[in-house]
Amino acid sequence: MTYVDDVLKELERKNPYEPEFIQTATEILRCLNVVFERHPEFQEAKILERFLEPERVVMFRVPWVDDNGEVQVNRGFRVQFNSALGPYKGGLRFHETVNLSVLKLLALEQILKNSLTGMSIGGAKGGSDFNPKGRSDAEVMRFCQSFMTELRNFIGPDVDVPAGDIGVGLREVGYLFGQYNRIANRHTCVLTGSGIEYGGSLVRREATGYGLIYILEEALRARGEFLEGKKIIVSGSGNVAIYAAEKAIQLGATVIAMSDSKGYIYDENGISIPFVKHIKQEERKCIYEYLNDFPDTIYKEGSYGLWSIKCDIALPCATQNELDEDSARKLIDNGVKYVAEGANKPSTPEATKLFLKSGLMFLPGKAANAGGVTTSVLEMAQRSSNMHWSFDEVDSRLKRNMVEIYRNIDKMAKEYGFEGNYVVGANIAGFIKVAKAMMAQGIV
Image 1 (cartoon, helix red, strand yellow):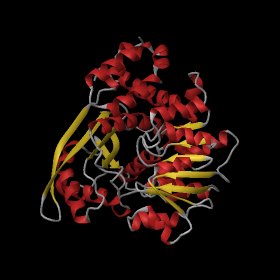
Image 2 (image 1 turned 45 degrees about the horizontal axis):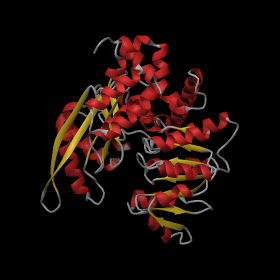
Image 3 (image 1 turned 60 degrees about the vertical axis):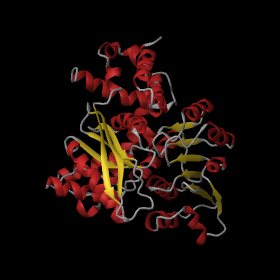
Image 4 (image 1 turned 90 degrees about the vertical axis):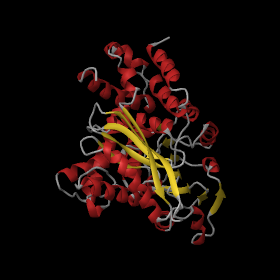
């Protein structure tokens, strides 16, 4: 058995009820065997054992009162996984599927994603099993105020700066920030993804989706190809999906299908993104409503069938493990050439293996969806200097950073003998930077 095998066996023993976390850790560690062959000092210092253990896990009760006057109780979490590169950074997720295993999965991925940005930020993730869907603004506000009353004890501009994630958008960030400001009595950058009116950055809402297209565009360019004329399917219809679709269309592609949790829409001539925006962002309704303005569009219940649509590029932008082995096989059989992950771990390990085996170009989420955290750090920089950059300036910095991420993972994949395998390239590039920082700081 190798060093990595021994560490994985011990990790499974210590975390028997956390399958999502073990799944992700296994995928990452399997890519790192070659690193320890070249860097035996990492093994001697037990870097991997320390890397896989969160520095701090906080779990707390979140009591709140609904509109009927009934007391509700949810769980709140913050997993502060690794701060070797800088203050913790990672989103807050409000969804009924949130538990410790899922958050450790996401936080572990976040460490490497943040490392790939080249910026001085560590990795964390948090959230609650509260679902804001169907709740009134007043209910969401009361929940957020209760959640932040406890979370405030563990965050701060030089400690941990959360952002939004699934279920946490401008509304939720506003309520969270308001409560922090009220209790702490100071207006500081303790959350990113804030409204423009109180210190937020332009491009923040668009960042993950735009960044996804920028890294995809660079990967295509390196192969002598372009987005123009390509047909794309996008899962999801949240910010990532909407703005990835928007940017792809600006660059000449055609988005022929999009989905939400209820079903998907399909139009060979192209989806109208302004209408999807209106339905999802303003009306907060199901994507089925798109048919009210475009009755000839095909609608299918359930989002699983989305992956059977013939396309050049697939962008999974909804949630983890949404694209399984069977879906991957359908995409490959239909001739898909490029898959780029806009969500966190949307492809199952089996699907990922199939993509890599098929030889198509696959960009993993830890690299491809790093645009959100990149722009979060740009927001922090603007707040700390009391500056406000233009849309074009932030967008330009975002694009430059995504291009550098692609070049870095491409370089690492080649350097370690895995040319074209960006899963390996991203894991190695992200890990080595963190490992070197941990070595430099001693046993802490």
